[in-house]
Length: 304
Image 1 (cartoon, rainbow, N blue to C red):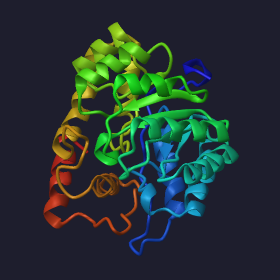
Image 2 (cartoon, rainbow, N blue to C red):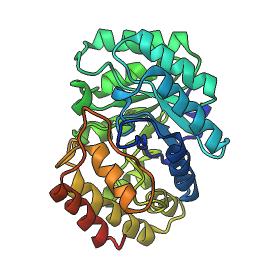
Image 3 (spheres, rainbow, N blue to C red):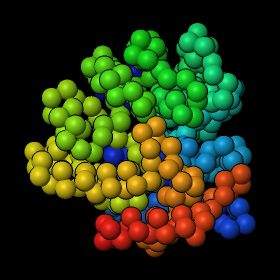
Image 4 (spheres, helix red, strand yellow):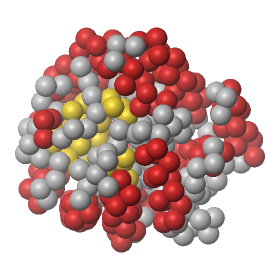
């Protein structure tokens, strides 16, 4: 497999998992949220990522989310399943569930918390790849894993049979650009910012889009990449500026939340928009009244 084995591009949000206030999985809300995202013309959907609170999902719940998303999308857009786990055995079971559900691929970080060595990271991905024949997007997220995959290591991982994409959420922008240059012709490369820098990268160096969080702005998110592709850079700048307002207000340079926690921020924002993003599940806590006001003020500033 390689980048041409999949058609992933544009804006693919890592979406929230709707829980009730009592912490139960809400599949009716999940279907409604998916329908809204599809109506807003997302270029794909990522299920059970960090935004989707994979860490508090049971294996049966994650598999149910995969099956429901595949059924709701009905082949209209690629659906990727989050397969992140602490052991290769767990990741293999999640990848197997994604394949059984008919998903387009899986998103997979190195094992979090453990801070594995380079040799252990390569072995982890090789083991999962050998066990399940499904396209893999390597997810570099130093904030959550404790390791930052440099260009040399990403290049080695890109040589694994089923690795077709990289989501590079490194705070080191120089490393991000070097990775794009080194890997762009071999794998799909995500993490392009929605600003003039992103426009320059897309038009001069390449890149495939952004695997963002939540899809709160709806059609504005994929609209940025469609406008760049169409050469309508004024529209792209307008849409990208709206996204940057949200990102700068809610998230820091390492993609961590400036207040509360990211799933709670995104879920509250979706609920403010009338979309069933749901509630967070412990150990995460809902936003305080002051934090809710910060989210509301940002949405108000964007006319939402």
